[in-house]
Length: 142
Image: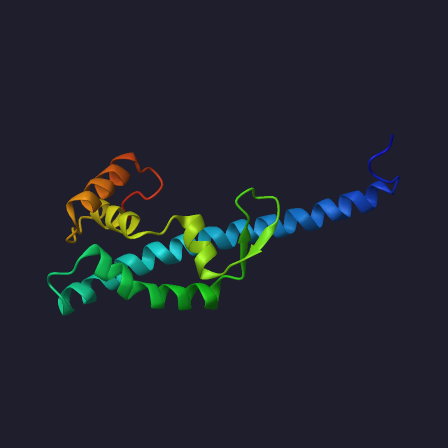
Protein backbone atom coordinates (compact mmCIF):
# COMPACT_ATOMS: atom_id res chain seq x y z
CA UNK A 1 0.00 0.00 0.00
CA UNK A 2 1.48 3.31 -1.07
CA UNK A 3 0.51 6.47 0.83
CA UNK A 4 2.18 9.10 -1.33
CA UNK A 5 2.15 9.00 -5.12
CA UNK A 6 5.38 8.27 -6.91
CA UNK A 7 6.72 11.67 -7.96
CA UNK A 8 10.11 13.01 -8.74
CA UNK A 9 12.33 13.63 -5.71
CA UNK A 10 12.74 17.17 -7.06
CA UNK A 11 9.05 17.83 -6.53
CA UNK A 12 9.21 16.55 -2.97
CA UNK A 13 12.40 18.55 -2.42
CA UNK A 14 10.78 21.67 -3.85
CA UNK A 15 7.72 21.31 -1.64
CA UNK A 16 9.90 20.73 1.39
CA UNK A 17 12.00 23.76 0.43
CA UNK A 18 8.91 25.99 0.17
CA UNK A 19 7.66 24.73 3.53
CA UNK A 20 11.09 25.37 5.09
CA UNK A 21 11.15 28.90 3.67
CA UNK A 22 7.73 29.70 5.15
CA UNK A 23 8.75 28.14 8.46
CA UNK A 24 11.95 30.20 8.68
CA UNK A 25 10.21 33.42 7.67
CA UNK A 26 7.44 32.78 10.20
CA UNK A 27 9.93 31.99 12.94
CA UNK A 28 11.84 35.19 12.15
CA UNK A 29 8.64 37.22 12.31
CA UNK A 30 7.67 35.57 15.60
CA UNK A 31 11.05 36.54 17.06
CA UNK A 32 10.58 40.04 15.68
CA UNK A 33 7.11 40.25 17.31
CA UNK A 34 8.67 39.24 20.63
CA UNK A 35 11.39 41.89 20.32
CA UNK A 36 8.90 44.57 19.28
CA UNK A 37 6.81 43.71 22.32
CA UNK A 38 9.78 43.93 24.69
CA UNK A 39 10.99 47.22 23.20
CA UNK A 40 7.52 48.77 23.28
CA UNK A 41 6.94 47.70 26.89
CA UNK A 42 10.17 49.34 28.07
CA UNK A 43 9.95 52.32 25.76
CA UNK A 44 6.50 53.49 26.82
CA UNK A 45 6.62 52.90 30.57
CA UNK A 46 8.44 56.12 31.52
CA UNK A 47 5.94 58.33 29.71
CA UNK A 48 3.04 56.34 31.16
CA UNK A 49 4.41 56.67 34.71
CA UNK A 50 4.98 60.38 34.18
CA UNK A 51 1.34 60.80 33.16
CA UNK A 52 0.13 58.61 36.04
CA UNK A 53 2.52 58.07 38.98
CA UNK A 54 0.15 55.49 40.50
CA UNK A 55 0.13 53.38 37.33
CA UNK A 56 -0.96 49.78 37.74
CA UNK A 57 0.01 46.82 35.60
CA UNK A 58 -3.55 46.49 34.29
CA UNK A 59 -3.74 50.18 33.38
CA UNK A 60 -0.41 50.06 31.59
CA UNK A 61 -1.39 46.89 29.73
CA UNK A 62 -4.67 48.50 28.64
CA UNK A 63 -2.86 51.67 27.51
CA UNK A 64 -0.22 49.66 25.65
CA UNK A 65 -2.59 47.34 23.75
CA UNK A 66 -3.73 49.73 20.97
CA UNK A 67 -0.12 50.69 20.18
CA UNK A 68 0.99 47.06 20.32
CA UNK A 69 -1.84 45.84 18.09
CA UNK A 70 -1.12 48.55 15.51
CA UNK A 71 2.57 47.65 15.57
CA UNK A 72 1.82 43.94 15.08
CA UNK A 73 -0.59 44.66 12.22
CA UNK A 74 1.98 46.91 10.55
CA UNK A 75 5.14 44.80 10.93
CA UNK A 76 4.18 41.12 11.25
CA UNK A 77 2.41 39.13 8.52
CA UNK A 78 2.46 35.51 9.70
CA UNK A 79 3.97 33.38 12.43
CA UNK A 80 4.21 29.62 12.89
CA UNK A 81 1.25 27.76 14.34
CA UNK A 82 1.70 26.36 17.85
CA UNK A 83 2.65 23.02 16.31
CA UNK A 84 5.11 24.96 14.10
CA UNK A 85 4.13 22.94 11.01
CA UNK A 86 2.39 25.69 9.06
CA UNK A 87 2.14 29.51 9.08
CA UNK A 88 -0.78 31.36 10.61
CA UNK A 89 -1.87 34.94 9.90
CA UNK A 90 -0.43 37.25 12.54
CA UNK A 91 -3.65 38.59 13.99
CA UNK A 92 -2.97 40.44 17.26
CA UNK A 93 -5.13 37.98 19.23
CA UNK A 94 -3.15 35.02 17.94
CA UNK A 95 0.23 36.68 18.45
CA UNK A 96 -0.82 37.68 21.98
CA UNK A 97 -1.73 34.08 22.82
CA UNK A 98 1.50 32.71 21.28
CA UNK A 99 3.62 35.23 23.21
CA UNK A 100 1.50 34.76 26.33
CA UNK A 101 1.33 38.56 26.47
CA UNK A 102 -0.74 39.16 29.59
CA UNK A 103 -0.68 41.86 32.28
CA UNK A 104 1.17 39.43 34.56
CA UNK A 105 3.81 38.71 31.93
CA UNK A 106 4.20 42.45 31.34
CA UNK A 107 4.57 43.08 35.08
CA UNK A 108 7.20 40.32 35.35
CA UNK A 109 9.19 41.69 32.43
CA UNK A 110 9.13 45.19 33.87
CA UNK A 111 10.08 43.84 37.29
CA UNK A 112 13.10 42.06 35.79
CA UNK A 113 14.11 45.42 34.34
CA UNK A 114 13.76 47.23 37.68
CA UNK A 115 10.35 48.82 37.08
CA UNK A 116 7.68 47.96 39.63
CA UNK A 117 4.05 48.82 38.92
CA UNK A 118 1.08 48.47 41.26
CA UNK A 119 -0.75 45.15 41.16
CA UNK A 120 -3.35 43.31 43.21
CA UNK A 121 -2.06 40.78 45.71
CA UNK A 122 -3.00 37.74 43.59
CA UNK A 123 -1.66 39.39 40.47
CA UNK A 124 1.60 40.26 42.23
CA UNK A 125 1.99 36.60 43.24
CA UNK A 126 1.67 35.57 39.58
CA UNK A 127 4.11 38.30 38.52
CA UNK A 128 6.64 37.12 41.09
CA UNK A 129 6.22 33.51 39.97
CA UNK A 130 6.72 34.37 36.30
CA UNK A 131 9.74 36.53 37.11
CA UNK A 132 11.28 33.77 39.22
CA UNK A 133 10.81 31.11 36.55
CA UNK A 134 11.64 33.30 33.59
CA UNK A 135 14.72 32.69 31.52
CA UNK A 136 13.34 33.89 28.17
CA UNK A 137 12.55 37.45 29.21
CA UNK A 138 15.89 38.31 30.75
CA UNK A 139 16.62 41.95 31.58
CA UNK A 140 17.65 44.07 28.65
CA UNK A 141 21.37 44.77 28.77
CA UNK A 142 22.51 48.37 28.61
